[in-house]
Image (cartoon, rainbow, N blue to C red; front, side):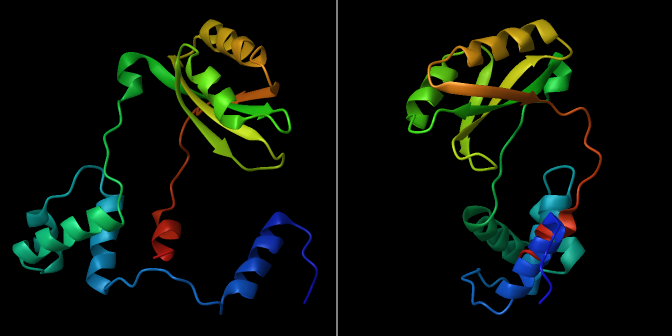
Length: 179
C-alpha cells in the first residue's frame, strides 16, 4: 500500500482499511432512507400527506414512520433567522492551558455577553473550546470586545475567531451516503 501524503489520501486509506469492519449502524428500509432524504433536503417542514403522495406510502404508515424516524434518527429544531435581526454568528476557538478544567473555563465563557454556546472540540491541539456568539452583523467593536474578554479569562492561552460570510454549497449526498 502506498504511503499517504495528503489529508485526502490519508482519509481515503482509512476508508479502505475500515471498509470491511462491521459497524453497528441502524438498518433502514429503502422507504425510510427516502423519507429521511426528503426530510433533510426540504427547505421547509414536510407533511406526512406530501411525503405520502411522493412515495406512494399510505398517510397513516407515513405518519408512523416519520414519528419513528424523528424519535430515533433526526434532530428537529427551529433556528432564529439572525439576518432578520441584523445579527450573525461569531465562532471563537479558545485554546485552554493543559490540565485546565474545561468545564470551569466554559462556565466563565458562558457568563460573557453575546455567548450562546460553548462546546469542547478536538483538533490540532488537545484542549480546545468552540464558542458560538451572537453579534450585530458587521459590528467589529462587539466582536473585538468579546475576543479581548475571552483572552483575559483564566486558563485561556489563545483565541482565534471566524465567522460565516456565505454558504457556498451543501452536499446532502455525503450525509445520505452514511445511512
